Amino acid sequence: MIFPIGDDQVKGGSFPIFSYGFILLNCIVFFIEMQQLGIGEAAFEQFIQTYGAIPAEITNGQDYFTLFTSMFLHAGWAHIIGNMLFLWIFADNIEATIGNIPFLLFYLLGGLAAHAGHIYFNMDSTIVTVGASGAISAVMGAYLVMFPSSRIKLLFLVFPFRIPAFLFLGFWIWEQFAGVGQVSEGGGGVAWWAHIGGFVFGVIAGIIFRTGGSLDQEEATEYA
Image (cartoon, rainbow, N blue to C red; front, side, top):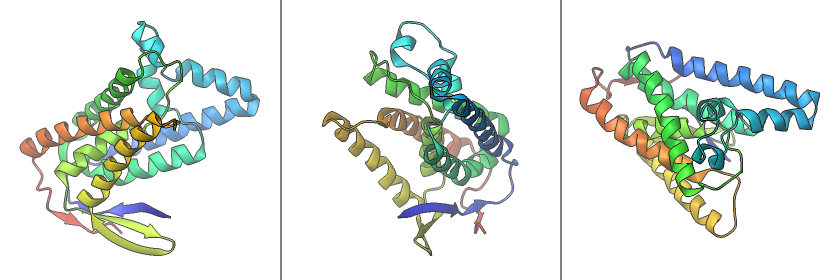
């Protein structure tokens, strides 16, 4: 199995308080979810149904608040560990470059763009949607534009190696489009269009950030 464990780090800039803060917040919410699960399966399901986003309800003008709360819910350990790993690797460079408040707005808008992508193709769905992956997809889209030559550190078994960000992220977005095809053939379980919607938003935002950025995005130091 191959998975990312680090990247090249930009020098200077804003301390990524929201990048790390979102990781902490997601973990706290997940702890609350596990408490609900400890009470019982019904309590956990009720919690997810209450705070997760359901496309059919959103299109009917109900529970708009879940567009935000659902960004901080996760379906299990593998779900949150994978999302937080990607958030930890890719978000801090962007926040350091564009600043704290712009990153906060970008992250939340990226999550909303991801919801828009998912809901557009699933307007009548009553399946609850949870997870930070839509907003994180926006982060990855912006990263592709802003730091295409940054080296992503991957781990294969116990062997680390590095590849350029444009290769890793290019393969990742290809997987998302391939996932849409799987859904059309009967597969499911992943909100592929949320990932794609968030990623497209991130690419557009990344172009804007790169044009107006104050940091030299090519100045990087190796992540320890």
